[in-house]
Amino acid sequence: MSEIAARPVAARARWHWLRQLWRLPTGRFGLITVAVVGLVALVSVFWTPYDPISIDVNARWQLPSLAHLLGTDGTGRDILSLIMGGARTTVFVAIGSGIIASVFGIVLAALGSLTPRWARESMAVFIDILIAFPVLLIAMMISSVWGGSLWVVIWSVGIGFGVSIARVTRPELRRVLQSDFIVAARSSGLSNTQVLWRHLLPNIAPVFIVQLSWSMAVAVLAEAGLSYLGYGASPTEPSWGVLLANLQAYIGIHPLAAVWPGLAITITVLGLNLLGDALREATDPTLSRGRDPLHPPRASIRHVPEVIS
Image 1 (spheres, rainbow, N blue to C red):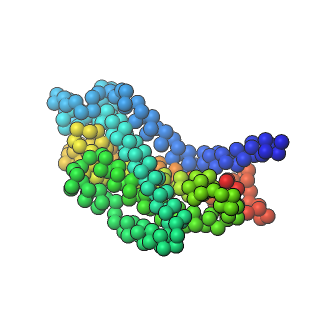
Image 2: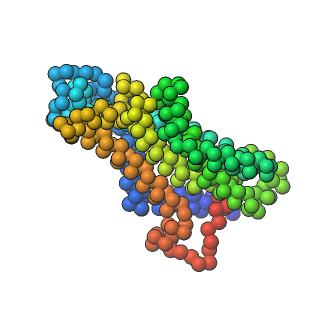
Image 3: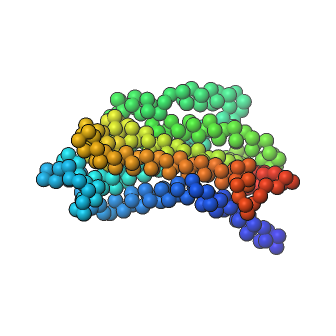
């Protein structure tokens, strides 16, 4: 009976940070921005006002109108259609690099926490060496060998930020490993893999989610930058970075056309960064309780992250 009564309490505690996230202005802005970009990307899979790569020389450099809401570029392509197609590319890169960064970061953090001492110290040195290489430099080096493509961007950004995630989550894993319930779990016969999935990952989830949101924000910026430099999406693929690179030569003549892709990149990156900040505040009781009038600080109760297990 006590277990049944405890389940609603645990569910409310687990989802409280989502409600706290929506109450934060930065959280609302981040959630709305991510939702809008995701919706635009989803709609662009099935419909755009015009073909994003279709050229119409009779419609070159048209100003915003009912026919072309954001105008056209120097080849007559509809900028709104290019922005929508670029959103699809951006979401694809952000999700793909996020998945790779998550897997790579968790593997490195687990190897640096659950292995013997000599292996842990070697992994710490290995992480420090990898994190010294900038992500953009790694992507350009790989592109020079394999050629520029979105997959090169995804793997480069995913591996680069996976190292960053590993560096942040590894100390958290080491801290949780010192808890009594981990000792009890190991005494009950659980393997390191079972301990990792059942107890460690749920307890470091807030830190991991915050780092992942920030990594996806930088992934959007990295994709736009690499595509701008010619190491990312091909000219036939709609991309905000490629569009911005094509319009930069005419920014003095047609400045409004270059505003739209730059604005899309800025708002998306800002939304993801603010979402990461809001997630940090919502999941960290030392930051959220002082600002939440419904949950004031309690001197007699300390936050124990191990209870999630």
